[in-house]
Length: 297
Image (cartoon, rainbow, N blue to C red; front, side, top):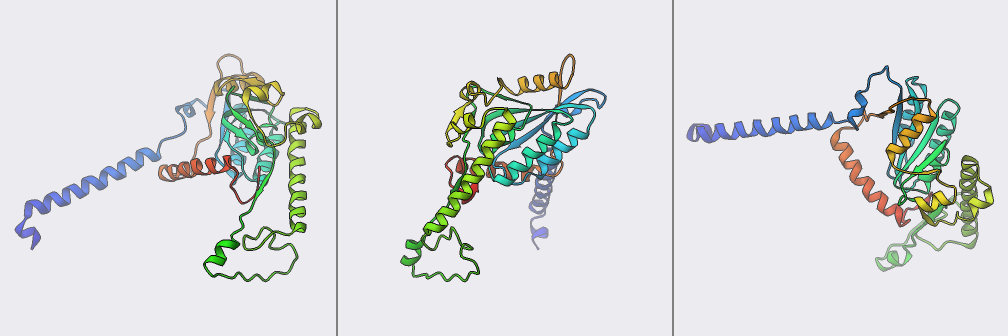
């Protein structure tokens, strides 16, 4: 009945719907095709420096490890640059990436380029590299471990909720938000935190070839500028990403102009990348204030 009484309106409705859907589809196809950089179109015959980005909170190391391994096995890649822009993250993943960097040094040089922030776990990864380049104002350091817990007993009492916990080990619910932490539990967690802290300091001392005591003196969680870190020997050079790429090219024996190729994101659609970008921003802000539960670098 609608099409008979209003044929023109019916036509316009269908036409506008088709145009709208087509526009959305075309836009998504174009956006999904966007890569990190046009520099990926370099001829395979050229000798290159591979650039891998480590961004945001460090939680899942697999993609970074795969990129490092792929560049390590690619004979046209003469050196690798890790572009780190991260406030830190979980201990295990940071150590996994660090270990892959150490393994790669047997075959190729790896230079860490520190962006706006490369603190805590971000610096943990950088310390394993052949060399570190930072901007004078890069936020780095924060060498320490934090474990955060929240006590919500008062809230539960106000709303009339009584938690019931059944456990098979004395420390199984350590850090529970529904009860007060015991002295024994606090001692256990402090011992654990100190152990991870020692691992962190040792990794930096070995990677940077600095005495353990010298690293320990600034490993109190303080943040440093890139300039401060350079003065302390925690950074080799002050400069930007292009400086790091040029240095990596020199280390890799490339003569003349150095070409850089960036790891392509083959798995993620534009929409997913956009969503993860927003999540990264939120996580970075939270991490900066150390509000994460559990233990993080």
